[in-house]
Length: 546
Image (cartoon, rainbow, N blue to C red; front, side, top):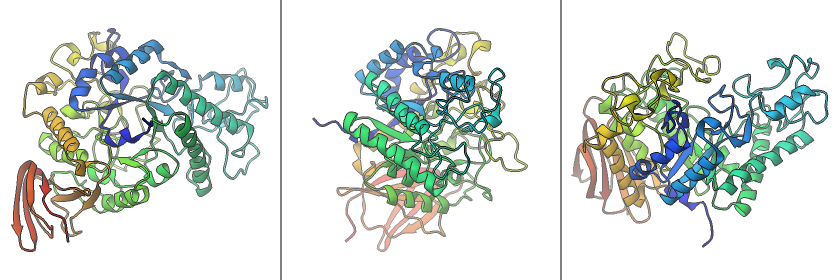
């Protein structure tokens, strides 16, 4: 059997923030053995791929995205042997494991940086981008002495400048950039050889400087294309997923999948960001689409998403994630329980592999007022809308997983003050145990959606995706998913009022896969749909257009 990455097309991915998922040794921080304890739950949810936020050794100035040693597991999570045990336990359950790679920068504690800062005049000090080498090695560099990525204390690795204009800027084929290219391949190979199934690459477009110029974009794409060509030969069943949020660029660069998020290619924010939590909605937007007011627009998302799908068709995949460690959870006030299921129907019938952030399947909320932890505050990094308070904090979306009604919601038996982040104090906080016992719970609904997706290939990654709404009728949302063998209509009304639409759909409903409040009336010219507040449905059609 020829090894391939075709498994990614059928993936349902579960993102685990390791320090908040399950603590096995009572120190208040989640770890690998804790994840192993919960693998049966993950499998039973319908997950076949997990993605772990950074697990490498770090001073944790940015929650592990400031890597000190790319070849060492952070002690808080266990040892390398614990990671190998996690791989074995996951693989035994049919679950693949994807790690998080920070390709463009390191921690200032990284031995590479420490060595170069100790000998700034050395010609071998070329792994980083030194703007000023005249600092006193005994005092160490300050932030103006080197180029950073994201936070100032994350020195950028030197992959060169596409068009050098200063003496300290290396071309992309200089010794320093070539050293880092070789190291990047070495890091990947090390973890692939242990059994890791792939990497999600943080800030994948941030390698060649200055970022986002046409020449730098092409040069960065060239680096990843070389990596992909090497993987196709030596590791043909391993995948690269990118945080580029620009699928047409990322897939052309060789990535198998790109996350479509809140930056670069637009659209995600216009659907889900309601003005609260971590990140603001797009400028000028008063209501997101999935909002009870029913005053949102589909147009920014429709145009951007369809453009990106057209550019990547047959070449790679796009995922729209259910939550993320970088922005507010789906249940972010004022969005309440009634509104969640419509959004879940959208996510689980998307045209790419669904990605679920831990706890979203039980409706964990964005917890306001949680104190900053390990670089969780984005003020100064993300432009926050003027006059909007409370935005910019990510800690509220990283609180511990809520398993049951025991101490610390079953996350840890440590004392509360030792916990990585506090447990949601809401007396009505959802838990896995409570929702397992309730057949009408969100958890069971999510499991049902995953089963429906798997059972009907027309809802999968290879099928077409068409938003049928005319511009003047944004509600309810009606999507046609079609393969060569079958077609499905997906309907959602995320507003608090009944919504109606008339559409020229050829064919009749053959099977109702899911229906909550959808009144489907067949007419000579097509169909008339009326959908109750927060209603949704998935319907199989029996014929194809002539």
